[in-house]
Length: 456
Image 1 (cartoon, rainbow, N blue to C red):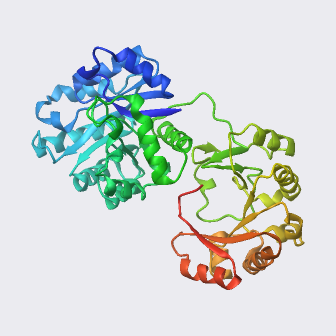
Image 2 (image 1 turned 90 degrees about the horizontal axis):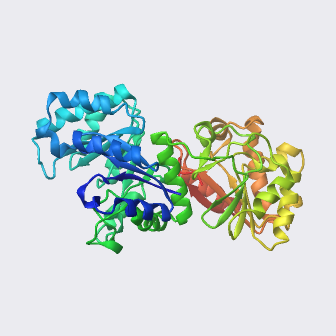
Image 3 (image 1 turned 180 degrees about the horizontal axis):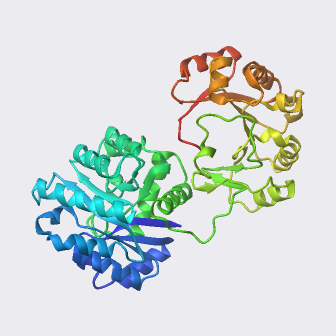
């Protein structure tokens, strides 16, 4: 399932074949298209189209290019339109210092007025900002505060610009330009944007992807952007589709038909098993405190699944080449379940990996690694701290200050029973990555850095 979060299907380029364009979008697995207004007249039309087609939503607003034409009565009309049943945002609004088709003071004025309408209507904003990021960010902060619902559309700024939008809680969307051969710098910038803050857009009829360059853009072409983002993030096409659709749903309040908690879930070419939500750590950076989702998968279990339920979920999953015990909790809390499921997986000659906080021996009051010999091929052990005091402060284990030393013992012992052992550390502020790396080297195991706020 895909969502095109920015289209202009009300434009005359679609007058002759809109039904066919929308049908091609359905065939391309695009469940929803968000149609964006650019003037009062355009905003009325996107509402009409949203009422006609069940898979269209409307966003109303006045583009900065139109600023010089705006009348005072237009703001009252826009406020009225914003209350429409299928209107889910205000946009596209903002500043354009590249083409300067309207005076900058006029652009600023209507931008502020529309931000105020968005705040009153409690709707997310779709921001057009071209060579005007400093002023756009300043006005966003002034009018909407530090936690803004919105998206920087057709983003073409720097990594620093992206960082500032993200710091405000905003999403970022990019379309056609990401596929252009000349966009190497933009692709590099995208690497600094978490996939959890990315939206897909076509901005059709403009900015067709490289594969269709010179033609009218349309929603069905969004597959080309999915492929490009998958390459950039090292994810699968399905991952990008699922993550960005979830992001759009979160921002715009779009509800999907079914979103059940997952026991087995795919990321890249691996199958992850979510066998418990319980944990013996309460890490200060833990994603479970802020969301139920990882890479678009709902992982908030209502109860721990049985072995039969886990195996059923494994057998129903798409193709994978590795099984990872991970999920939203500490897998070794359910050691017997872990061993039984791992035995089932190994019987199918599939590699296994265990992601753990290393508390297994403390949990069971015995050395558990001998029991995992032959069942687990790779083990990844979290070590977020360079000494007992720092580890206690950041990981907050239920076993107290002795936990750090016990984790080091667990890592050392793992080498005897598990073919491949690695230590991971999160780039959370205050953790000395270089010292953690030295600990791993001293223990004779591999070391991997995990990016803070980039889960999965």
